[in-house]
Amino acid sequence: MRESIRYLNNAKEILKKIPIEENVYTDVKPVREAFGTAYLAILEAINEYLITKHGLIKKELPKPVLSEAEGSVDAYREALKRHLAIRNGKLMREFEMLYDTLHIAGYYRGLIYNVDMVKDAIKAARIFIEKIEH
Image 1: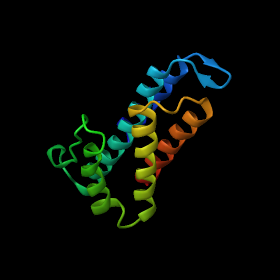
Image 2: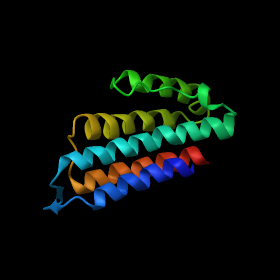
Image 3: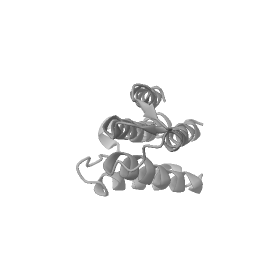
Image 4: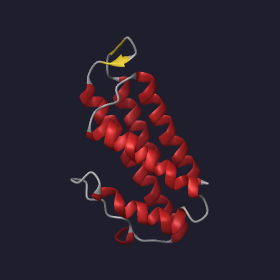
């Protein structure tokens, strides 16, 4: 899961550079960028799992449509249902929560900029990645 952790660490580095006032990031644009990068870490973790545990090759991996908010996730939902959710139904719920938080609220709409909430979302992403890893 090296690449997914690298993405997640990049998200954390972005956040470190943003000024904070009264527990709120003062510049929402880089916060959105960090959320987008953290969401990509989730997708990368799923890709890595499918390659290492199920022997898929790159051309068989889910293909997100990054310009459409809802359409981009359908291929990953299907892959999770087929390969991961069979043994752990909680992963699907966690993925949906992370999709809503990281991609929709954090990146797409820029609604989350409270420092504690951002850190909690990044932590949840790391936990999800670690669950897939084992």
